[in-house]
Image (cartoon, rainbow, N blue to C red; front, side, top):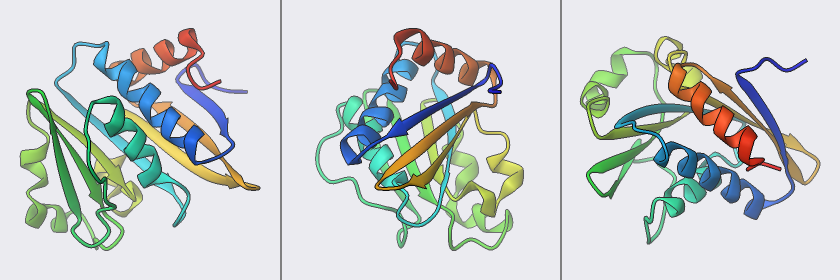
Length: 165
């Protein structure tokens, strides 16, 4: 049985994964929030960066959206906010976040999307939204869980709009 703060969706292809990212971005835009932390879990190639592409497209970000696997962080401006897309796969522990300037990324006007949050669980566990992508044949299963009141509001909006099918 699903908890009230959880949502599951079947994503049949890349377009559905991007659409799911877009739906979450639209739900966030409809709320008065100037900061958010989203944790994105899943095996290599599960679609985390594809989901982020859809999220950023819904915000009006144009141009390439690159995986931050080697750069560790890619930032995108939209309006008065900035979305930071981070990859923690190569991090050892929380001490490595200091070198990334992570503390500065959590301020007002900052939306943070973190791939591999399990590498620094003490930060990943406090995410407003926790997203997991798992392989399902040729598609994926998406699980969203709320970690805050903002996360609960986003999930409620997605459920009400039946935005993830």
